[in-house]
Image (cartoon, rainbow, N blue to C red; front, side):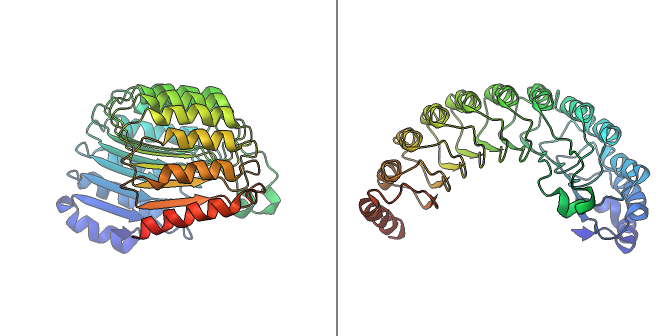
Length: 376
């Protein structure tokens, strides 16, 4: 575990062949091209590595030659089982993505792969399509984490003078391509997928993703982040419900729909039916903060979907700023949770719900009873 600099590179050159795991982080405040150029051959020499973690987030001055040296470095480690790459906020255009993908295709022994490309503003359709092809025929891959979040904070990164410039954002076409590629990795047990602030992603993209996940029979953990994907509607929730409803091995579901303002009760009702079919569920985390159309009907259905989940250990639900949600829905949820024998963690957020005043006294009593049981 080291910081990437000249001194570290010299040390690794001496001990490289004895290394089995390496984790390196570049300092985004300095130019790292020379160090990266030297670090690539070190990785190539240490060809018995089983795990590599490289963090080049915010290294916006990383040149093509340095990037290619890094890719050649890890690509020669054919025994790699774990690879984590963080290029968030880098200027990673399609040509560099093609270089990266060429290096990834030969790593057939990967079991865990994490790729963070959040806020890579120059990444386009071609680059994402190349990435999708990487997952074809990855027979040993079990854990996949992809972060393709867009840039909500462009002014903070590039300064006010450039903040008005249009920002490329992934859309349905790119998500559909990734979904097709994902079907080539049939052994997946855990998927973590972030499309936060990808405002051009709509129902068609999520439906394709849900279909791809639906074909993954061994999934135990799903974590999907659609925060501020404003084009998502109830059809997307219905597709996700169908995806998780027949997963016999699924134990943990996390979904973030914060500020997806088109979502309504019918979508949550459909999702609740899917959750009801997940018999081994132990953890559920749902974020509907700012989904203004949601009301008691959706929350009551969600409570019913959790009704027979006796193995639940953790529940986190966020309905903050859902002003149509009232004490009726909250009461149904609390009653549902009250009898769960293994429940250890409950995190409920209903802040700024204007209808909570109605029947609040009875709900408070229910919450007190639940809190007392959890603390006992």
